[in-house]
Length: 277
Image (cartoon, rainbow, N blue to C red; front, side):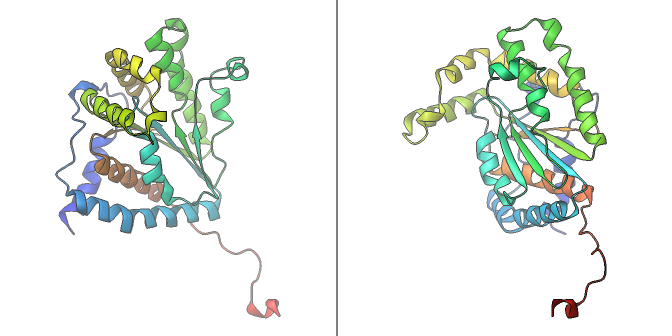
């Protein structure tokens, strides 16, 4: 067994937020990479992990007894889109959907905040990826003070109950917070602003939101601390190094799917080659 293989369980266990644990994002190193070699990590992801992800997805789809919901959250430029492009692309789109949540529409605002979320969760046999999620309905109102604390502060328990309901219905949930430094965010925003092919990704709001960095960090660490449970754990991914971010996410997805133990269903009725004639 290689040193890399020995680190897998260590990576998964150390990045998962234990239930009831109060975390401090300021004390977590977004550059930490467990001393793994970059080229080795990229090779393993492309040549091994993606194939294993695809195989497990196929079993999940064939069995159609369980579902997987993957949530990505993070401050602007933390790499949500990039991670989905480099890791989630291993899945067959026939049974994997990516849903991006923007600001709520008037119709969505006329319902409870989980209405638009619930109708996008995966059916049995499917994998659904949320690019932002129901957590935005705590983070944004809290940071920008658009609704009263008495409203957004109740949503922690509503989210926990919602995710427990999904879990009880055989939907496994894993949640990734992509943790980058303020300096790394600045670097990425500058790169986008100088690259004509990426300038469209930077909005005036992105730039204004940098002034609320500390408020966002506080809001995220409270949401993660209050909503990491056995049935829907949070994983805080050191995301300054894109290659390690991709590797860690891939390892955790595979570990989750393997624990779900998807199996090919047994054939129904009698089957024989003679019946084809």
